[in-house]
Length: 186
Length: 186
Image 1: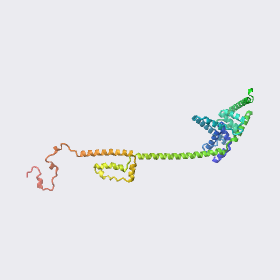
Image 2: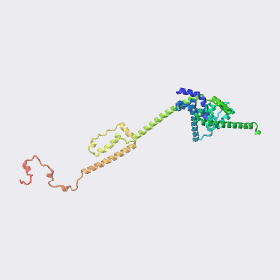
Image 3: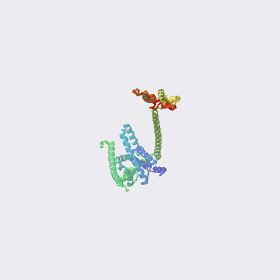
Image 4: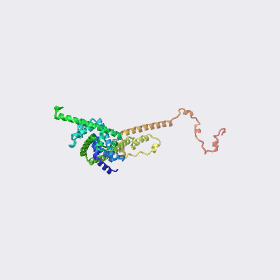
């Protein structure tokens, strides 16, 4: 596959790739952009080569997952080496949580995001691949580098936990709402 | 994969998330071009740093070799002149006379001599002085040995020394020669 073909393929999957990078980076936009740039660089420089064993999308997602894991490890090391100053931490947090549009601020979506963040990494990833990217469990397993049985297990557990967390946040929301509206009632 | 009620709900939430992500996804070109320019920049900086390193290495080697060259004992004509001059004055055997006479120093050579490091000159002068002292001692010993006479040499002398030491004259007549023969009275 030459550079032009690679670019075409990457462009075709760009939106899905960004969504997957966001999921791998725990919804941190800046980190996701950095990871995706690194992935494009790897592919265009030929450091990551598509062998044709799987579909291009599955291979691309696997590269993104591995790169995100590597970047996460690096950032952890960086944090260990240099203590982050409170000002820096505030800056990073504000950049990551910056609301982009009205949808971003929607309460349902925020609650869903919070529930997703509480899920263990593997479960969150398999849920994302199945529901967000419409991959089968086999493909999700290929992307994550696990067997289909393991992927199914993560999927089932993730679904149960997500349901539980969503229920919890909904009840929390109800209590909060009652407190705000009618403090005497609680 | 058939989705149950809960799964459909989760999928709807993921769809909403996906929609929001798609709206805020940066363009492919915006992600790909910085990656490529980053590669070019990296390559450029690598070339630049390689050139700087090479230049620095060459400079260091040049300085080191210059230092080595200047630290070597100077074999300048001026030093040779210093070394030869006392040997001639001491009346050394014909070797000294056979050696080519040191030439007068040219302006460039004098400049070299002056610019040679004083420390190196001092070391060279010390070596030459030691060598000359050794030569002087050798000459002194040789002269003493050649002029030596035994203290009992007078006892070895006799009245017939002249006859024993001189050769007979071959041009004399037979009669004269017969006079030397023993047992014949003239």
